[in-house]
Amino acid sequence: MKKPVFLVLLILFLDQAIKIWVKTHMTLGESIPVFSDWFYIHFVENEGMAFGWKLFGGGNFGKIFLTVFRLLAVGGIAYYLYYIVKQHKHKLYILSISLILAGAMGNIIDSLFYGMIFSASDYFHIAQFLPKGGGYAPFLHGKVVDMFYFPIIEGNYPKWIPFVGGDYFQFFRPVFNLADASISIGVTMLVLMQKRFFQSQDTPIDSVENK
Image (cartoon, rainbow, N blue to C red; front, side):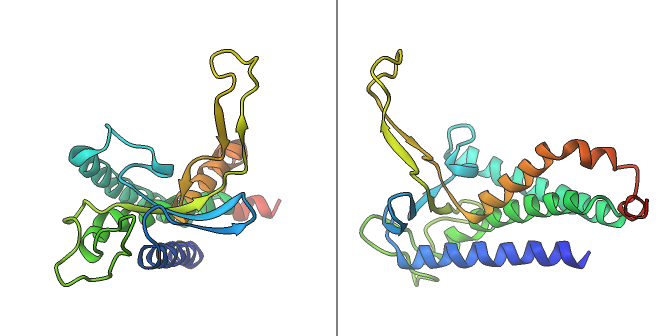
C-alpha cells in the first residue's frame, strides 16, 4: 500500500505546488511561453470539471453539486484502491486507479479551500495568499486553477469543408492542470488495457507472475 500512497501524495504535492506558484505569481489570463508557440503556462480558472468543462452550466448549484460529488467519488475510489491493493491486483491497474484518485483529490483541494485562502485573481492584480480581508469565496466555492496550454496546431479550415470552411480552428484548445492530466492518463490506461486488467481480476498478480 505504500507505493500507491506515495504516488498519490507526490502528484498532490506537485499539482498544488504548481497551482500555488501560478496563483501567486501570474495575473489571470497571463501567458508564459515554454516551448516555442506550442506550449504555454497560461493562467485560467474554472468552476467546472476537467479541462474547464462545466456541469449544469456552473453557478452555485453546479459548483456545490460537483464538489460534493467529487468528495463522494474520492471516498469510493480510495476505498476501492485499498481493496485492490489488498487483493494484489494487476500493478498497472493499481497505478491507473492511483492516478485517478490523485487527480480527483488535487482539484477538490482547489474547490474546498482556494476561495478561503486566496484573494481573487483578475487581469490586473496577482492574488494574495491569506489576505487580511479574507478570501474571495466561502468553503466549497473555490475555483480550480489551470495552466497547461498546448496550441499545437492552429489555422483555418479549408473553404471547401461544409459549414466550417474558412473558420479558425485550434488544436489543442483546453487549458488543464496536473490533476486533470493524472485523471486522463489513469482513465486512458483503463480503456486501453481493460482486457488485460479485468481478465486477471480473479487471479492475484503474484500468481500470474509465477506461471
